[in-house]
Image 1 (spheres, rainbow, N blue to C red):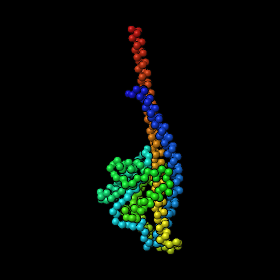
Image 2: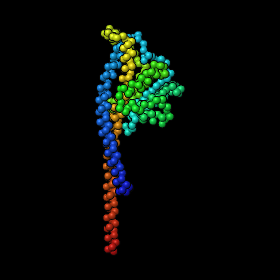
Image 3: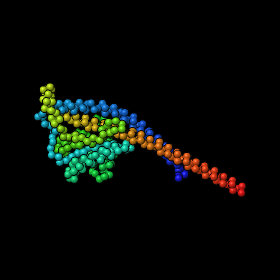
Image 4: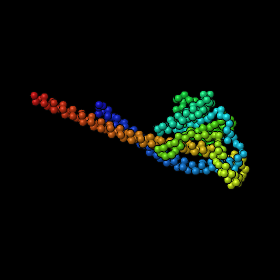
Length: 296
């Protein structure tokens, strides 16, 4: 059994750790509230913008844009959104593993030909991929810090230009979607090429849309404006989802760590009390034995 000094040292160490984890939990909870409000406000706007684009495409079925170009897939770009900081459970590991699965299974032949690129948003995902021997084409760690729509525009524009120029034939995005503080949904989406709304709508819905909408200015003008706007909004929404999920995962992780520290502290104090009682008992036995010896 460990001596009293060692147990006291461990109790002090666990207590200090508990204070840190509890403080981190409170900080994450405060940041989560702000991030949650941001994503809840963003979702209706992104959904409505996507709906407008679908209606516009149904009204203009013969308009072709490069963003709907379904060509032979020769090179793929996978964007992995994680975080710059750890202590958030399996948050970063899950998205990194999913990115590896998509690259090595869905695009196995292309991956073997080194025609699959990883773009990492977040230092932890980059570190995970590089530590396992995967090459990372581009990293952006600054997007997460003080996230704003204006900061994400150049990065998304770069990916859009890569697709329209033919550098990439498909753009995949992997991130954690925020459900609540305890639940984050691992999400894998194809950002480009876009799927025509005709694939999801009935002929009656398409015919109704064509007769119920008057388009002004021209359809080509609107498509050139709405599609890039929608893509940039979708990417920004994914970033907001990931940031909110990160704070939720960290708050949950720190909450569990604080509870574990409490439990460990109780066990150590019980062990300390037993060791102290045993020490006192031994001292009493020694005193009684010494007194008995003196009587003889």
